[in-house]
Amino acid sequence: MAELISTEVLYQLYQDCGQQICTDTRRLINGGIFFALKGDNFNANTFASEAIEKGCAWAVIDEPAHKTNDRIVLVENVLESLQKLANYHRHQFKIPFIAITGSNGKTTNKELIHAVLSRKYKTLATEGNLNNHIGVPLTLLKLHTSHEMAIIEMGANHQGEINALCEIADPDYGLITNIGKAHLEGFGGIEGVKKGKSEMYRYLRKKDAPIFINGDDEVLHSLAESNDKITFGTTKLYDVIGKQYTDGDTVSFKFTTRYGEKKWELLPLIKTQITGHYNFINCLAAACIGTYFKVEAEDIRAALEDYVPGMNRSQIIQRPLNTILLDAYNANPNSMKAAIDNFKKHSASHKLVILGDMFELGEYSKPEHQMVTDLLKESGFENVLLVGPAFGATARHAYKTFESTQEIKNYLTQNQPQNCTILIKGSRGMKLESLVETL
Image (cartoon, rainbow, N blue to C red; front, side, top):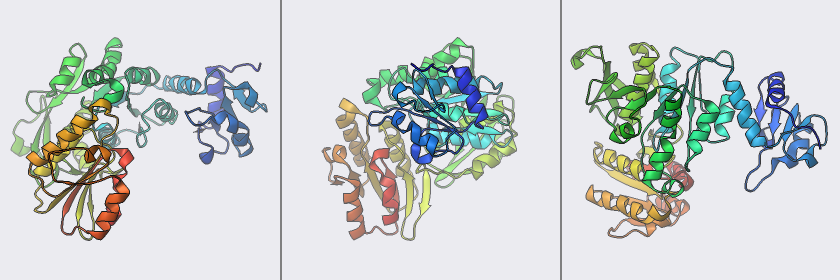
């Protein structure tokens, strides 16, 4: 049997290849290293020779039968080798590593914090939502000597995953955005979510590393009693204190510090371009982290005002006939409630709500979808379109339901809304962003 190579030898190959990594034969990098990962429906070991033929300098496999030339190297487990390589590379850097997880708002927080820290530091941040057992190592392997900060997003839908990602990234700081009813099926209910997400607190506690925490969130505080805390919020004298202002339909707020100016009228108003008043606390988290790392207050304000939401999250889209509030990247009961409560307060006179099914709720799916429709009714919404079989099975309302996104797209083509402000929200798999072109 061919000899297995060590992490140290693999790291030298990675350095020799200019730190270029690829895992997809459709996006091979000339001169890079191809990692032959396996999934439920694929085995990239079978593509190792092709990767070399198409220009990769090396291919990493874990099945000896596919070692057909000297540029294909063998390891015990490709995924574990990728993770060990990332951890080894991470420890070549003496810079702050900030980890982010939570039920809602992970990516928005990551983007806001990146925007703020980038005003002062060369900052690496997770691209898109590459936040799992493959995405986190790939993010870490993008670190270069020019980087001064790293922001690593971590997602999970089962217990143990956050701890495993912390073991790979070894963060120096952590932020849990919130804990809610996301991935209830995988975590085994809300108590399972609490236990799973708070693995980050427990990891950081072991290394006496601090956390950034919303001081107003009682659930988070109950899980972080013995952690070293850097606090933000609205109700007490936290390290960073914020005050939200009603100023249109995007987030506007002011902030100060524990020892800063307390006369709110003397502080500048930060007017962001992000919709959803629930995003205020996310903006305040970014202001807190920026303040902690000595980004000037004026630069924090400019970063948050210049930030433009993307990726189907908290976006305001002006169409010829309608205004769309697009928040269709993901959905769970907590984020649905927040979106509905926010839209209820919206200043628009003609409102349309389009909601798609929430995934990964398991046995909780039926009552949670019913909760959403009950909330819509209680909130006084009459113009509502519901998409997906889970919403289709709800009762006690007269809202129009559609089995699929294509079905509602056909309906909207024939029944074009006009002069409406439209909230669109649903789980990623519903692909409700595809409705924008129809509206």
